[in-house]
Length: 114
Image (tube, rainbow, N blue to C red; front, side):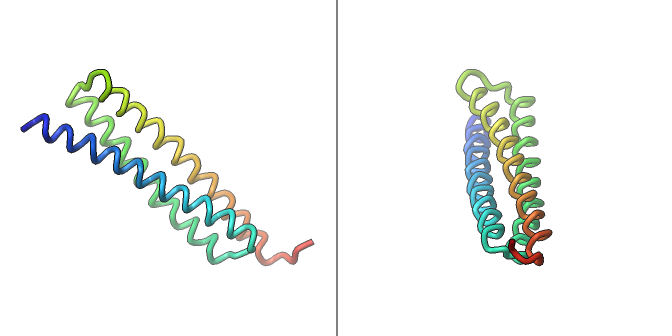
C-alpha cells in the first residue's frame, strides 16, 4: 500500500514536469511570435503565464523534497527525482526568458518599425 502511493507520487511527478515542459514550450513560441508580429496582447498572455510556470516549479520542487525526505529513494528513483528537480529549474528559467521577450515586445509594440 505504501509503495503503491510512492509509485503514484513518482508518476505524478513525471506528469507535472511533462506538463510544465509543454506549457513552457508554448510560452516560448508565443513570446517569439508576439515579438515577430509586434503583438502586445499575445505578449501580455505570455507575461500572465509566468505565474503558472512559477507555481508549477514550486509544486514540483515541493513534491521532490517531500519524496526525498519521506521515502528515501534509491538508485533509479533517486535519479528520477533529482532529474525532475533539475528539469523544473531549467524550465522555470526558460519561462523567465520568454517573459523577458514578452516585456521587450510590449515596450516596442507601439514604436514604429525602422
